[in-house]
Length: 161
Length: 463
Image (cartoon, rainbow over all chains, first blue to last red; front, side, top):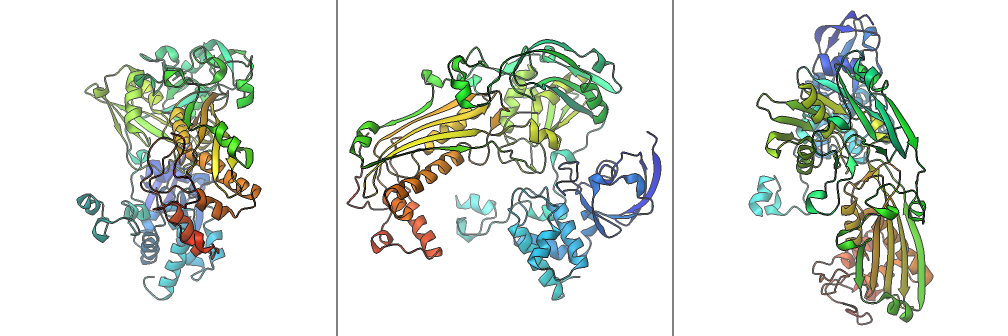
């Protein structure tokens, strides 16, 4: 299979990568660019551990062919770490012990950020819907839902953003 | 104690109970900066794919790896012939509790669908997968057993020559892990009611989000390092060294943060294959379960069948408890003895019963080998006991809370294992649960305490 060159932006930095028809964004981010926050839990789109933002939209990197991402703007948790709103979410995760083994956490926080970008005052049901593509085997989800709700309240009061 | 607690970041003057304790890696978890085994990159790494059996029980007539060896990108193909030292192993061989019986790569027999037969190390994972699919194995199929009743029936197909009758034999020639305390027949004769039932659990997969995986790296000093997410570093190092014929000093295992385990990463399922492939190819070798592997070939929790017979008085005192448990451990022993002992140790539950008899079997079937999961052997014991407690309470028309309080351990009671209870807390736990749920308990039950036994119940019998 022949690889083509693709230019895209990852976490604000211009990258030029090689991708054949089967190269996924997950492979590009993890293997070529060393963004370790993008986890590989299933390689089949079912666990959400590789969740990233592509042009601001929440996407599962393991199902996304990298070859079609010419000009795209990709953001991983490494990129979000600089955002104030993300640090409010992260602080809420810490306060609510919303991570145990940590393997789902990166994707979970990317999903939470995508939700709050679109809906700054989500209901409990909307939070659960937003993280329904992110599997967690440790926490039982409740601390995560509470952490996201608490982050939304803090951001609404202006502690961040 | 205090110094250690402070070191661990536990506040409150060394008291951990009731204090929120921050998970050590929480700050790095939320930033995506925690390093897992797979985040460590090693140059010139090969990828491993295992050719596994599509049949559950068979004799192997021939293994043909010639096409796989010619396949693109392949660096090494391994079968049992490439296992240098211990071709069949057991964690328990070193302590004399079980002979080696599980092959790293199948030798002459298949005992479960998914049993590893050959390993292919290639430059890329897809090359390894392509090559592994080209391996041809000729089988002579054998009749299979998939259930403990089938496996224990006279004349059933047997999995092992060393374990006739398809059950493990415990040290000192016991067919089961046993408890003998008092006289259950006498207890049944005294009882007003007998209540019998059978409780079953199904195998389930631990399903950590990070699948089991490791990278084995040959060092320039003749030593090997395995980066792994194992939950059992020491036993895995010892067993892997034994299989590879390496002195333990030449094998180093580097663990760290695992992306979940829940018992599913206790069994040594991946490290020896990566190590042997690294030894043969002289290159670093990565072997990780895909999600499909994790769901189809990694160890599950066993299927347990717990048969309980209780004798009980009209006033709620249990006079005798008789338990027979069959743990369907699947095709290989692995750590199942440990689960059987934990299960037996948990009998007859946190209740003072003067006459107890229990037999806990490990039964071999042609199913996926089983392993630990969240309270190895204890969960099925608690499940069966507490279902039975409800059933018995109903049979004597007694409130199940009161029935439990009446029989709960008190300090000074003798357990069926002949250890005196000194830290009982069930009475207070049930009372606290009652307060939280607005459950109305009569004064007599609100006044109960782990420190003293009600006059109506015998302090101890049996012995």
